[in-house]
Length: 526
Image (cartoon, rainbow, N blue to C red):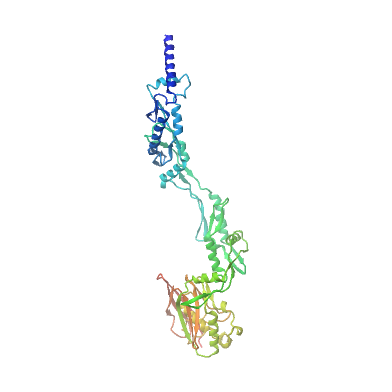
């Protein structure tokens, strides 16, 4: 019996050795690749089968299962590819992985059960990442960084929020490295990852404290010959947290700081001194002079840093604004037509007429930029004989006395009424202490340097040019701009007489909205 066993073993081994020798570099007998018989194929034939399987694999369904969602796609769009060299190598090594003494018996067993070789896989991770992001869609929630927001003038911390996403690396790790079939769906079970903000709430919180402390401070900004105060509260709406660097820091929007500078910097609204004169078809800008203005590069950061550190003042870089730049800027302000005009009469050939003409000549062509306030006293200064003014009757402290510049109140009254009907704010004015019949009742203004002024504010989006003209018996003030608001007198507290008189005005804006204001006179009873 022992001899019989030995003979059988010798026969099996001999047959295996002979079959292996005869096979040469062909695929070992009874081998299947992904369910397809490839045993005995020459290398070229095997490569053709592998190519066919590689063409079929992209259409294989792929199901990615997570506890929350299920994603479905196919191998092609997920970047799962057949690794042809690795697959051919696996096929060629069929029957060689076992110890030598076992191989004849594996060969014998293959006649009953074919030996299976899987296809080997490779992954294009970039393509897989793109597809996973698309398949997740709204189920992928990005982490939200903490931020600083300004609400009702107070800086507040908005905490960061964790996100959730399916990581490509997790799918690759869970994906089988080989397949027994390219026709069966590939199922992968993975966990999605919680993603954290790149910066913590604790890192942003100190910036909130800094911002609120800054809002309580004021610093003096010096830019060349200019000096003005910047309030932290005014630029707080433009402050934000910059999280892009190595350490979080506060930054301010240049536009917000710049707008505040325009509001507070003396003479900044028209730094080159552009005026307007009569030209072809209307008024045209006339160049003034070059000017050093705020602000040059780095000024915003310097101002913010000064406010953050509590520095009482800061010098900032300037830049040169040329006279030509001033003309270009003024050309775009919409000074196109007369939007309001008012005329008051006077007698001819009196000394006061000289003063009316002198002040009209000085003011003619003056530009009030958007947001700026025009002051008669600031522009003309004290009215003196050196400037062409002459003595004429005036009311000073309730007394009729000669005064250099007497009569300029007629110009002020005419400008007051032009602004009144243009719907412009008139933040500073004073009516005469007694009513003068050549002026509209309780709708007039007087001047006395430096204590009594007339101011007109431009609250429109366009430039406004004051353009007075005169004759021997009247003075007219035209306001040139683009039509915006209009003012209308809607009543008086009384129609005549002395005492307190209130004139009511309704201003109508382009959108149809209205605003009501009033102006008061206190006429002395004589």
